[in-house]
Image 1 (cartoon, rainbow, N blue to C red):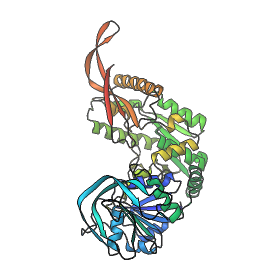
Image 2 (image 1 turned 135 degrees about the horizontal axis):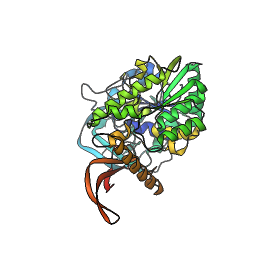
Image 3 (image 1 turned 45 degrees about the vertical axis):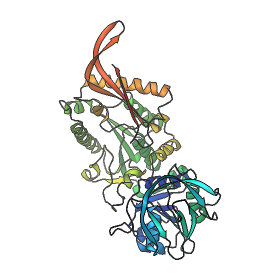
Image 4 (image 1 turned 60 degrees about the vertical axis):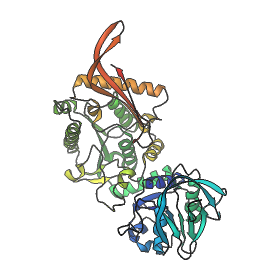
Length: 478
């Protein structure tokens, strides 16, 4: 798909994804490429401007990551952030040295020139610093346009070369007006149009899928989660009944999940759907298994077997739909350089090769919240669009110990009660994940007027924007 937006070269910063997110929030398309992407590769994306991300390296080290020097000859506006500024300084003959002290945290930026990058901003703003090196000498042609107490070259530019740089991080929330700075670069300096919307994305992607697939047959492994659901509805919009979805009921699902999938895809969207009842197969395969990693492997391998067996019943299939998202793709373009390995969907890993199928990944340019926006635009119900992440192995890894039907039924009911209460309290869409876990212990409790000795359910709620931080765990007696 041809876009005209901003390319971000990744030098290994923990904030690189945030830069892309901030640009997209401006309705401007952005993509991340490895720092050493060739000029030819960059040109394919038809960018209006380029951003160099920050990174942990020092430019004066022998193995410091540096971009293709031809990037500077493209004539496109460039913005260097933190390490990005330092690598530009080093390239054009300036001087970067190790700072006397690592500068980390809030700083007050004094703007010296607000004619372009800082257009419309007050004279002084708060910014977020995170660097151990500093620029002590600017290259010829560069001038300072902002400073802090510790950084006389906190922002610089060379208008002739169309290069700007900042020593701070405009992409983080700790730089409150950072989004305005990025907007000034993307819109005012690079000339990007703010016209990248989900409606446009749907039209472009439908056209692209139709041209790629034609009248050939396509299958999709449907899990009921937002990624595979949105991918399926988008592909169906493009090719209609040439898409068949396969849903495997492994007996490890949440309460009412199979019914929800059948209702949504058969009745609402009229998408051809095959439902495979494989509950007994999975339970038998899990007998006596307690190790969570062994459970994952058994479930994953059996899923592939069941799915493959069902898919072979559909004649002339040439494509497999997969709900790969942009963060999965980004994993392959880190500071280490390009990689051919892109993380596969947890349910269908290995299937394209085994079945000699070509992949369709209609969501591979989108972040999770963008997929949710797309789902809303396509008319998917909120219960799917805003569904919390659910593991591929399902409830099996939320039972600590051996999996059996009785414990699955207990956990399924407890999980349903928990989610019902969280929804009633208005917290379901505020939490990244909330779920019940069945523990391998029993404890004393009271039921009515009697003492009981029953199993324990633990409740875990994760309040995070990325699913990686701020865990809160508590328990009740079941």
